[in-house]
Image 1: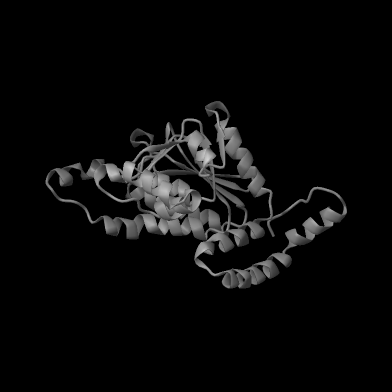
Image 2 (image 1 turned 90 degrees about the vertical axis):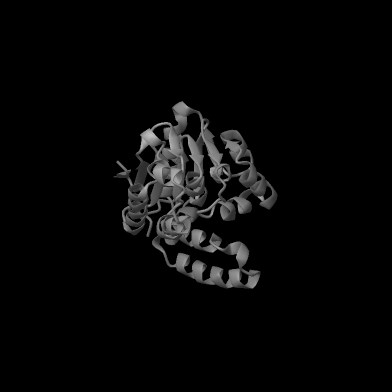
Length: 261
């Protein structure tokens, strides 16, 4: 078991399925998730991607179980290689995907699991969800882009506090500070993230992709650089079928029907 994929109605749901270890990452799960995101990103029928977890956790980060003997013998793995080969390609695939990606955070998201949720475009949390930068508890630093994303969401001071304490951010606090976009009670959680996915899947897919591209690195660009990129993006959006459909619906005082083209 690694990642289950479900495609229906323009939505691809990727479910991390290692519930016995709280959906912790191993090599197989990492490869399958990268492949799943890349496949859905390239599929013209898919207009929204959802990542969620089986059982009671979203993702508990790296599975340290197989490394127990090495650590007991004083042999630490090369964590930089793990980042380079597994986690960084995953985060880059999520950010490069030209479609909205929802993290449906059903439970604890710790370590790289928190980084995974933060890398997505939209986060829906169960009321039982918690985000934990647990790295510090084993003498490590947040990776997989966690502090890059988090500092932009809540500021460097709060991000530093979460990084050095390893304290959990509850679903309610995550919603209040803008890390989560929606929070739902457990019984309504799946319906809530599926409704969000349907909204995205029914929207102007190419415009969503262009928005995502403009946001990627926006705070590192100058205003003039951003304005020039907006010229290119708006010109491209203006030549889509969805733009014409939207304008027609505006004049006809109807709701637009976008087809993702």
